[in-house]
Amino acid sequence: MKKNIIYIGFILIIFILASSVLFNFNNRKDDKKEYTDVTLAEVTHSIFYAPMYVAIEKGYFKDEGINLNLILTPGADKVSAAVLSGDADIGFAGSETTIYVYNGGEKDYLKTFAQLTQKDGSFIVSRKKIDNFTLDDLKGKDVIGGRAGGMPEMTFEWALKEHNIVPKKDVNIDTSIAFAAMSSAFIGGQGDFVTLFEPNALQIEKQGYGYVVASVGELGGVVPYTTYFARNSYLTKNNNLIKGFRNAIQKGLDFVHNSNDEEVAKAIINQFPDTSLKDITDVVKRYRKIEAWPKTTEYKKESFDHLQEIMKNANELDKKVSYDKLKYDIK
Image (cartoon, rainbow, N blue to C red; front, side, top):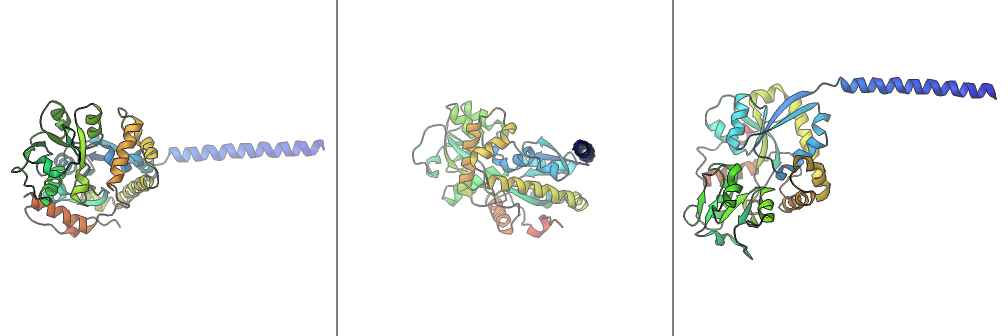
């Protein structure tokens, strides 16, 4: 009996030692895992981009061997400039910028490889409360719009014309104010209306400066609104990396579509330390309602064609570009 106890004890000691060695080996293996640094320039920091922040917070990029450095670069033109100069590896903004760059004659032009949002993410905010708002309420009024040639402004003008309202004739649109300064300009007394992303629109409401009356996304239709792009040379050289990047974004989209609003809000709350969980949840609900996020990262031809229609409508398209020319197919 005593011998059996000693034998069992000996076996347990060997098991514990073996487990310890295996645990330490796995830890060293994880420590030695190599990551590739990727700098991503985002056009603005908004709850609109919840699936991407989910991918960051849940470690999906790390799972793909990517050490992501996210930098804020306000304005799609500045995002494309950062990518073209090499200050950023990947750009995150409206696809219109890839068309501008290509038509500008850039040899190592930008190609899109994934999409995150499919609707305009801005909301029309009124200084006065309006019940049963329609776009006709904008006639004769001053609206703080986005940068001329940018997706927010072009989509807004498209929606107006679709409702037989002529921009700058029936409605006075101010496109001179920097994107990041639109909220403060409205709070300061400029404009009867302003178009804002979240959480800015909600903050204006909570502070008592205005009321959200409509979603531009609902009015503008499906477009490749915010996408990921890089120089053609970078994409071809780093195909596997780009595949991993896309996979991380897809996991983020899957999480958003398979989770409720509060679960999504909890996942991204660290990205918005000045916004409460309730407010983030409310904003996620707003964006889900307008179907802002596609099911997959696929960059579709029909939405690209619609984008060029919107650009042409805004007199911002010098010439149409082939979808195949500006889409990167991941191998």
